[in-house]
Structures are given as structure tokens and as C-alpha cells.
Length: 135
Image 1 (cartoon, rainbow, N blue to C red):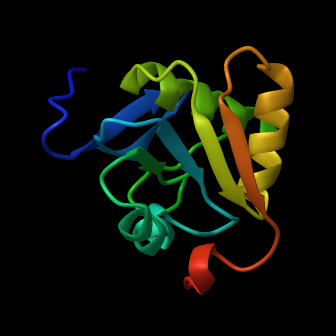
Image 2: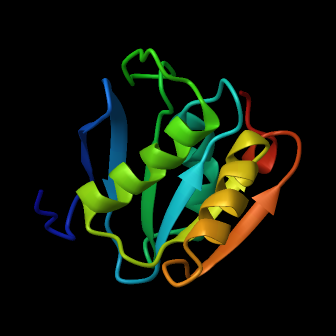
């Protein structure tokens, strides 16, 4: 997949028996991958992305069976960790900054622990969505 760094790309990324709805909003800076809390969709990150602005590369995706992503037979934590890898591979991101809240924060911690040489950093939140967004 090729990205022009001019406009956003949105599409489906295949992983295991499903496909994830991914949005890649290019920017000249660090790639930030946003990880949703349980039952949320990538829409939850709109305000955060607007606040941070175009100097970052923003990647959001809907987890399995959320938002526009497809259903799967596997909703395990391991499956969700594979999803992070699939999104990174499909978008060509090598050292992301992972930002997550709730379930997404847990994914960020575990992914970072397994991939210490591949992560630029992590921002973690516990409860409500980003900037009080609706789930």
C-alpha cells in the first residue's frame, strides 16, 4: 500500500479471518497509533487528532467487530495483539508511538513489552475515552 502524505487513506487491512477498518492520516512527524477502549471505534479519537494537528502521522482502526471492521472467530487478547502488527505492517510503520485508553492501554503495554526495540513510546489512559469522547 502506498501513502501520498497529502490526504488520508482509509481501507481494510486483512488479518487472520477478518479485516480491520484502518485510517492513516499522514503528517511529517512521528506515527501515532491510537488503540481504542473496549466496544469503541476509531471515531473516539477524532478530537484528539484535531487537537494534535497535522504535524503527526495519525493511524486509527476499528478492532474486530467494531465500527466498520469485520467479525472474527477469534476475539482473544493475542488476536488483538496480532491486529496491531497487521496495521503496522500494512501502513509501513516501524516504530510507533502507541496511545491507548482502557483495553487499548493494556494492548499498548503488552505490545511494547513484546517489542521493546520497535516502539517509540506509549501514552496510556484508564477510564473514559479520549478527551471524554463517547464510546
